[in-house]
Image 1 (cartoon, rainbow, N blue to C red):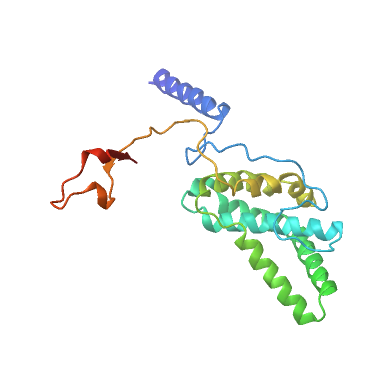
Image 2: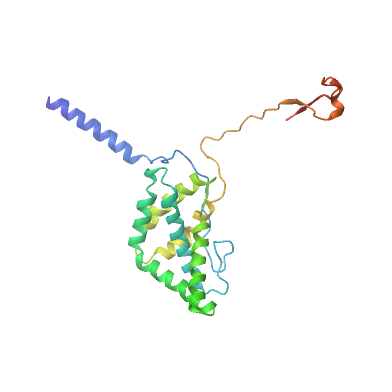
Length: 222
């Protein structure tokens, strides 16, 4: 009995070791395209909502807030697969980097105070900026690629040392934004067959008074 129990334990240990040592496959069984990109630089065009006349610190605050918004959208949009842990990762990022996120928000608020005429106008501009930033991460056709990328980056950001979220964002925000673009499954590449269906022409000259089709018109292939 002891020998049998020992054999079972050893077998289970071997299986567990094999599972741990092998890479974990995508939870949604989807291999995304390569969305990685270069690190951001001041004045980088096309990265979310632009802030005219922003300083380097204000631009970085903008990027950091975009990363937060993107991961927050993933928390809400990627619930179709709980194993992605998008919700847990966002909560972890929010807790671990609360100070840096608060600093980014304050920097953005000061930007709008500086670039608008009144405190009310500044708050309205900040609110609109937040709404547009969140809306910019909405996707339907690219949901798999976005959710898988956000899941990966969320886990990485969660365990980034405190004070390092901005640097992490500079290095990885482009990847998150690239994942919003169209992309197909990369592992099982397939070319769909093209079918042509013959149909008659609906031109009046191709039909006689009895509704018979005139052969001289031939067929149209769709």
